[in-house]
Image (cartoon, rainbow, N blue to C red; front, side, top):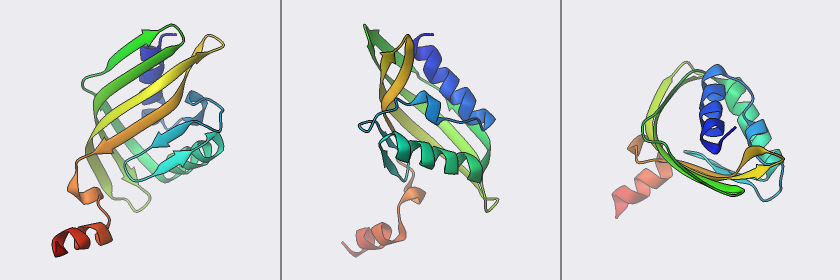
Length: 136
């Protein structure tokens, strides 16, 4: 499987509510930044993604500009992704997101060693951050 196919399989697994941690390298140095969280180390990523899968449904993941470069045993990517899901509270959430990351080939399979998902959506700010910004 190529690095690009691995990324697309990750998107498919997210949509289907399947486990996501198998896409990450089992390493203490792997890191995943989400819209509102930072997970460091495979165990933390596995626990965080398991909780996400258990507490969300109805995922939409629309890749809009996936760019992937592979070189020997390393690959890197960027993408613009529309993400939407329904939380435990029944609320529908939707964000235009920016993804980037690095993958390593391990035993002929690609695994994420770093992933960063961010958004410019104002509604992801914490109330404290928003209040501090208003005071300036």
